Image (tube, rainbow, N blue to C red; front, side, top):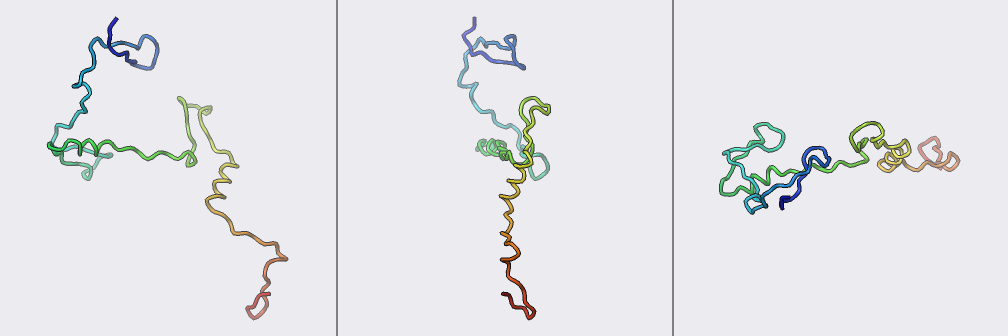
Length: 125
């Protein structure tokens, strides 16, 4: 048996686990750099074309390593697993009302007998 690290390929199953016969070297762990004079970042478009400074390759790498903001679970329906309705986490009506109430508190309403009464002439009692 090889002394290399076991690696899983594909979707799973014992037939997809193999070992590499050679050991990992320092050269295998080097972060690749961009070789072109220009590179793209973001989704595309002219504004996302950047000049590649060969003396500072970390700038290009930093421009490409963009993390998308985490999605807040209360903003929408969430899905887990491979799909299907059983894997959907849908907020209940009560959860939606609680979210709406917390975000937009209504002013306190007084019973009619406690409300100030307007009297002709613009004065209140």
